[in-house]
Length: 477
Ligand code: NAD
Image 1 (cartoon, protein in one colour):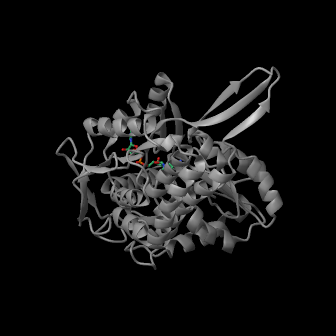
Image 2 (cartoon, rainbow, N blue to C red; image 1 turned 180 degrees about the vertical axis):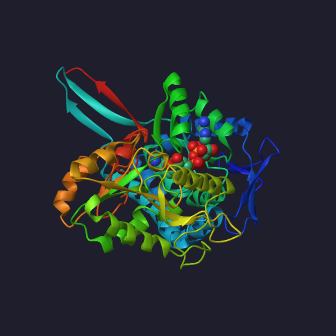
Image 3 (cartoon, rainbow, N blue to C red; image 1 turned 60 degrees about the vertical axis):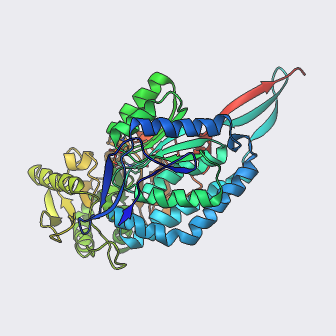
């Protein structure tokens, strides 16, 4: 049991203003495994004030990028050393299979941190331009106090996409983790303190929607970076629009994997374990629409059904587990509702369905639906669980048009024996990323969404650009 009765504000373990608490419940045992304060508006005020002070008067924005990189590099080294602890903790909080967790919940966040530490040295922070009217110095300055609001599915990864570039740019941060997964941020706060990041540069207040909404609208916040649902993203975008606050939104998805005629089926279907079902299918970029040529539809249905039906569902702490429990009862209900909706819409269950694999814990059987049309709700709405929709297509143009016929535009993939051709097809998909024979995110390339999947980009130099303001200083020739 991890009990925390304090909040990380101004570099101290501060007493919360209220008395409310959040219970963290194991999705596997349904037992309480942790407790943290439930942040209130007064706590957000204190955290924003600390971040504001650190930005307006503290050393952080005035240090050179190299000095900041040295400090954040210490955090990265601690993170690298202790990442197994982080993986275990996230698995305990939200049910991520440990095999995925060591990579996606700990190693990748650390790689992102190190990527931005290294980028500080090569990034052009200031340049001299010969303008058309005379010489101009163009500088990049930190955008200010950043509100970082993250979901529960990849809590460290989504936080690090914000924290790492914000810190390197010289911003200060108030982070609000999800109520389902606050424990990992306490471990991170310990490491932040140990690394010697100055007081008030990072502040962390767990809380729910109201606390998040209060933080977004806070007049002393300069930029909001949000990862979560499209519904919440729209509200946050509206507030930021009204206040003309800088905003980055990473939202939902309903990504398509296109299997081309010439694809090697065995390796393609094996690839879907990661591309479509990573993290129990609780992944924004999961390829949950599988597009198969009609000529190979039955073959794909058999292979996909066999692969998904054989996945090991169980204790997420077990290294043999491929699918763990969903994060909460609410999520189990939601995913099961979609399985009912799919049946009502006339789709056919190839494997899985409503029989729960375990009585205790929030498990759902990994499920594949066949006979799906792209108009069905199970093909249009984000389910956020281990449920795949197999959709037939007639020819390549039809496949591209089905893939693009979505309100979302986050990820995608093309599976083929001809990688060059696969890349040409990928260029036609209106999403922020589209893999060929795999789906992955790389720390040094941009990630984000077209359409309802968001605004702006994270990762890569593009992710750093989201935390700077450009300033021109012209002078006489
Ligand atoms: P959610 O939108 O309900 O909550 C996300 C976070 O925002 C939580 O911390 C929550 O407390 C907070 N929040 C909710 N409403 C808010 C508001 N109006 N103002 C301020 N804060 C608010 O989403 P969730 O259920 O926690 O997470 C699942 C969603 O996240 C899925 O839709 C998934 O696709 C998306 N997601 C997207 C990405 C990406 O990079 N595109 C990554 C992971 C998850």
